[in-house]
Length: 312
Image 1 (spheres, rainbow, N blue to C red):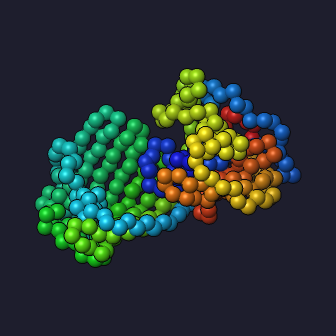
Image 2: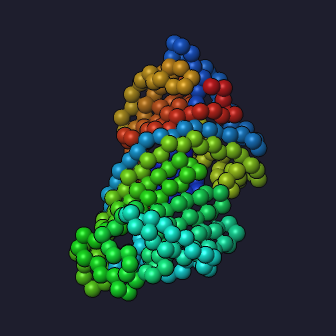
Image 3: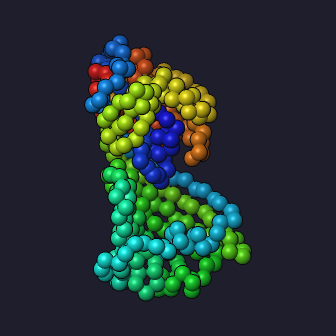
């Protein structure tokens, strides 16, 4: 699959529209063999790939010379949240906080925010981009949430912890952002992230126009981008077409347990570098090129569930 899809397995998209992990298919028997049926490549409307994704990953990033005002706006406050539509009381660390409820709607994008009435601190927000709904909640901070942004005083070790729940795709990312080395409006920002995912994902072709394929979530891809969810060869070709740097690592022969029985596979380690960073994956594919499993080393696993492109 495309490297941007791969990065989505381990990072918060997130964005996401196409969030994802990679895996897929083949047919097998109790002896661990594979059918020689080829993957169908004459794609048509209605073709689909469905897979399960599960696991967790942790990451730490550090950015120097980060603007302190941007830190406050990103993790604690909001300069504009829309129009006030009412009030609600939320709990934060055991205390009641009266919040103004703001809403904005631009069609494909809509959001609701619960903003502390007296300080402007955002305790909760729900955003919708197309069909993707994300809920962000302030879980913890050592800053005083009764203070307005202009009165907030940062110190080394000041932190904000948020949970980011993309419920539609079964992904929760918990991010703790901590500042240090404060100097003249800048700081060093350290982000500790813990991503947990337990989801079933399905991609279906909605339209085909020449070489352009539109999926049911509105994403446009090429044939090889789509087939990369099934075919090891298409996976590699998609990386090359995108000019995404990759290196092949260890290659072994194994037998793995799948939902469709034991499969004799080639396990190929691949290191991919894109705009999100460098990640190592292992693809497990059978003799007829079908990828049954993909592991984002070592904790996120994506397995094939069903597809219209080959008999499992």
